[in-house]
Amino acid sequence: ANTPAMLECHYGVPMTQGVLNTLNTRLDAPIIAFSLDHAETKVVIVDREFSKVMKDALVLAKAKPLVIEYDDPEYTGPGERLI
Image (cartoon, rainbow, N blue to C red; front, side, top):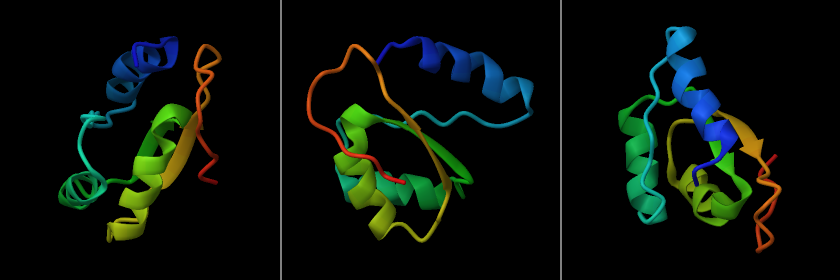
C-alpha cells in the first residue's frame, strides 16, 4: 500500500546501507518464502493487511527475519499481529 511508512522505507533503508527488496503482495506464500530465502532476508516490514500471507510465508521460509509490523490506520479490514 502507498503509505507514509512505505515512503520512509524507500528513503530510510538505503540510508542505512540496507537493500530494500519489495515483494509483490499478489504472490502466494510459497513464492514469497522463496523470495525471502533467496534474498537472505534479515528484516521484513509487513502491513497488517498482508499479515496472513506473510505469516504463511514465514512458516515456509528457512530465513527467520526480524518482523516489523506496520498498522495502517486507514485499513479497516481483517489482519492479525505476527509478533
